[in-house]
Image (cartoon, rainbow, N blue to C red; front, side, top):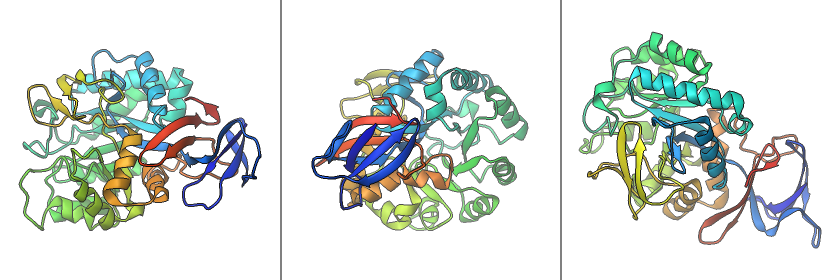
Length: 381
C-alpha cells in the first residue's frame, strides 16, 4: 500500500510504502506517481494521542451501561478524528465502581484487537485528589480519599496491571510516598485537581511525577497572582503539561502563554472528553452525574455552569491550538502526538522506516480535516 502526502515541516511530499503493520520505505513523491491513498496536496502525520478520554460517541467509560461493544464503538469513532492511541480515563468514584469499570475495560482489551492496538493503558484520574471545592472540580466529594497503596493493588488486579497513569494531588497525606511507589511500578504520575504548595510540587517532582494534568483547570477560582500551583508548574521543566484547547477550559491567550512558557517540547494536547464528544448536543452521563452538552460545545453538569469534561475532538483541538498559540503545523503535530513517547515510550510519534503504520491523512487550510486513519497499517477510517 502506498500513501502520499506532505509531512508537516518537510519541503516535498513523500510516498510511504506500508507492508503489514509497518512503514517499510519512504521516498520523495515523484510528479505523476501513483498511490493508493492521499496525494501531493494532503498531509501525513503519525497518529494523534489523547491521554484523557472519559467517554466518546455516546459511550460513558465511567457509566453503568459500559460494555466492551461500547468501548469498541468509541475507539472506532476516535480513530475517525485521527486518534490512534488513547487512555480510557476513570474519574473519582466508589471503590466498587472503579473495580467494575476496570474489569470491563480489561475484558475489552483482552478480546478486542482494535482496543488492544489503540490503548496502551488506563488513566485513573482520582480518587486521590484535593477534596476542597474548586480544585476538586466536579469529582464527587463523597468518594475523594487519601492514597492507599493496597487499594491501587486491587485496582491493578482487576485490570491485569493496565493502569499506566494516575492523576493525584501531591499535597494530600501520603501522596509523596505513593508517587514514589507508583513511579517504581512504571506508572506515569500526573499532578492535578490540586491546591499544592510550591514545596509539595517540588517534592512530587523529586518523587518522580512527570505530568501536569489539564493545567489551568481543577484549581481554585481565586489564586494569588504569582505564587500559585499553575505558575509553579509552568516553571518546572521536569513536567510535561496537558492542556484542553476548546476555548472554554482555557481562554485563547492562556493557551498561547502556556505554550510559550512550557515550549513545544513540554506540552501535550488532551480533550478530557466525555460521552458527548463526537456526538450531538444533548444529555449524557459521566459516571453518576448527568451532563448537558450545549450547542456552544460546552459540557456542563445538569442545571449548572460547572464544566464536566469536554465535547472536544482532537481535530478541533489541533485547529484551535494553531489558531490560539500561533504554532506551525509541524509543532502542532508534535504536541498532538509526538511528545507522548516521552512519557509513554510505546506511543510512536514518528514516521520512519521500521516504525508502526499509525498514520493520519488530513487536509489543512483554515482547519484540520481528517480524511483517513491507519492503525498498525490497517485502514480504520
